[in-house]
Length: 129
Image (cartoon, rainbow, N blue to C red; front, side, top):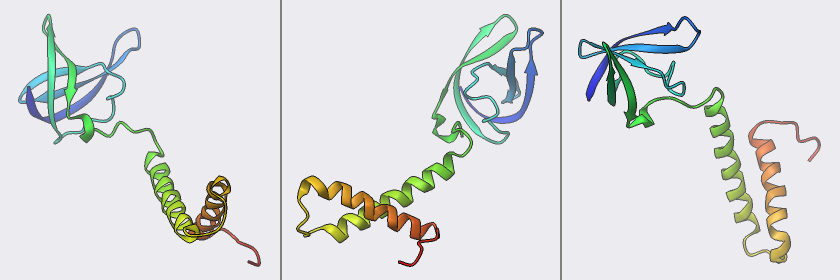
């Protein structure tokens, strides 16, 4: 089934289990999968499977969930930090390419230099260097 989410509202059972209800193509669908709760927004296109249970339609699978932001809080900050670190490692390895440092020691030296680059990039105090 494909459709655009028209409306989203939160709900809870008497025993405290949380779920969400979506209005899609004029029909109501319930979602119980905790990984997706609070991640689907009105206006979002959604492709999914559902199973009817009495008068209820329960979503059983969501396709193309790359569009759904299920990443934990702070993910973007950690991702940006990893990008900076990889860039620093690459720069450090270029600095050491062709050096006479034995291969056994080169990885450690590359990481040491990359950490210095990272400190500089993140504007940490480098002291009197």
